[in-house]
Image (cartoon, rainbow, N blue to C red):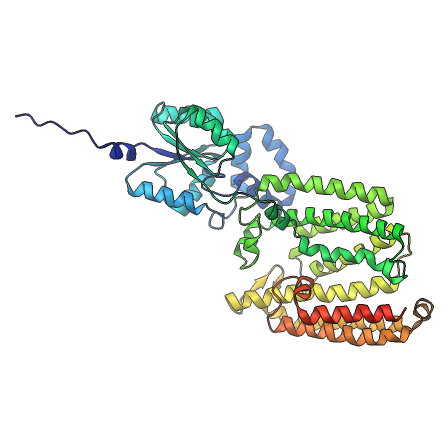
Length: 485
């Protein structure tokens, strides 16, 4: 009797259907093209001028040159753990896994070496840009119409979903989910918590806006803080600096994606973690700058000029100067001084040489605390070979010496100001400022002691906001200054 071969069970038939997955936004929580462009900006900034010429030769050529010149570290990229877990489960069932992406093949193969899951790689090859309909045609040629299932996450995947047997969606919007369901059966939806407004706000680093309160300092120094018109102008300058600083923070985070992912705290920044799309950050940056300069221009041309200088300094810092030892902290200290200058120009009060000198010395000391603290933290993780930006672990001693000396020079400048004729004209009880000198001397010494003990893990001003001793010390100094009027 002739044996009859049994048909495979439906589950087994399903397992043999190739599962095709996109890269950006599906396997990864990031956009590799944007990542590559900022790696290029960080490592070879002059090559940015080549980008338009590469793009003129087509998207595939553009991506190939980027992959050859500036590829992100695939080991540090933010992978979607839920998608990888699902792919591993399907691979264990014997299902073929295909990575099909518009990214360059060189980058795609590096990702494959990292995750070790895919049986075949289909990607842009320098001549053909494998996106949209081209990707669909390639998949149909390889596996046939409805001969594969497809995992994707954005509208560019519509053609592939249309040719697939079943669709799998990664964190889709309600609109995308509804539209895909019209032309392909949706088998599974892999979701992560959606991007919330708090994530965008966190990316703007609002906790650092406290630094921009320096624009009010000139107004406070001449006792005009209760003049409504001047206070309004100073507030507008404060808002302009907040918008400009947040734009620069976004740029800095885009430039530092790989470095932030290696840092125990900075890895939680929304761009590094893939919580906020990089494309959204690129859109937010010019909008924030436009708002900042519109407000500054409304105030005075001088405020706009100071804001432009601050912007250029901080962009230069993000791209290169942050890697130059001592230069980086000078730039940061200069940024604080520019805030004071902008506040003076906004309310039409002459810039005080005393005030600028005091701010330069004090904030140079605080900037050195930030670098010192980074070295202490990294040294605790990696040992004596720790290094941060342009600094080595052995530089801690000199950083502490320079920082403490600069902080004490700020106290000296305040003491000389207390003994000058100018303060006697402004304050009826100017001798009270000697108490402020003592409190400032204590606070600078206290901050450096906390830094040496490894208690400061981020910006010292942010630490001061959370530290009870610092809050009380600053509050008492402010109270004494009010009593001196």
